[in-house]
Length: 116
Image (cartoon, rainbow, N blue to C red; front, top):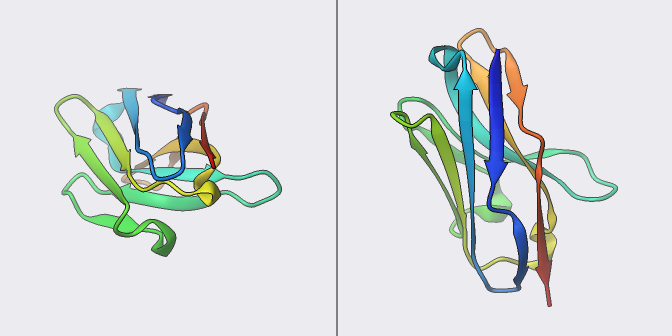
């Protein structure tokens, strides 16, 4: 099993920045892709960004150019740098890890609130 612990959420004004971190523990050798999803009230959970162990990245169109995902394989940690935050970025952000066998693990979620 893989355990994920997120940190770094909070309240920020529109146009500001936040950096989320997610540390993985447990069967970390099984992890290929790590990523961030978010869920706003009344909406479905959606992919924000993902990064493979080899460094290939994928972003939602809505965050391209503003968010950057990175990964420290030595520390089993994934980061999400969020710049130019908008009101519509307000959501609970969840860290995700996917194994080579496509098994999923989720963090507990961290709230990001963007105010005007």
